[in-house]
Figure 1 (spheres, one colour):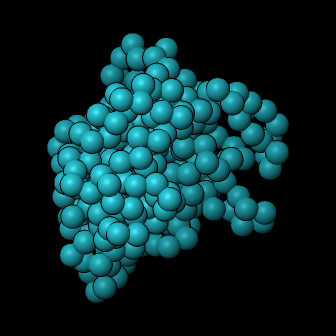
Figure 2 (tube, one colour):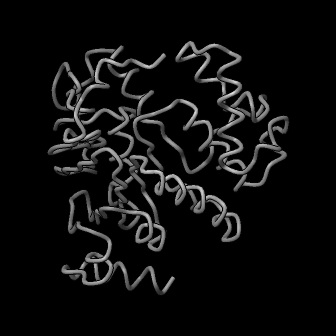
Length: 266
């Protein structure tokens, strides 16, 4: 079962807090000191041009990438590090596993196992990672597949599903881990417009439930509709941030105005 040592943390403590995060790949500095906070129930969308650091930020938050500087806290618990700079790594493998299982990530390319049917794709991690009872995991997997609207696809294999159905299966798989927060990395960008709407409906439903989410998206309407807070990244720094009404309705920076104009033109 998931670790419960931080379950009693008050809601005033952010689920995710990132301070002064820096990330480089060799000489290429991708994140140059970024702060992000998401309290319980917050939906925070990250927008910006390709290469602005959005997806890298998400991967650093989930400890899929090692950052060189800055603090990452999960429910008030800071990640512990060893080494510094390019040699900095998390020092506690159990802590990393606990945080990753509580911050479920939904990727752009679905990442479903082709040799498993959809039901087993969704229940695999709760059984193997969380050591949940197999029958209970199957019941939960079926419920979450129903929730995202593909309960009738349990016996199908990924190749037999449309892209939108595969992405909804990936969301069900993330939900089946019962995470504290969901991290979406461009969840609709690989889909055509019709299939994109299937996934957007699911994300909107999750937002309406009050789930904590960080969403990297190119879809400004999605960001405007579901977010409590929107962050515009430009070349590894936060150029502007705020409530969606303010950010989209009255952008302050010239870069953000240009970015929004370009996305409308697309």
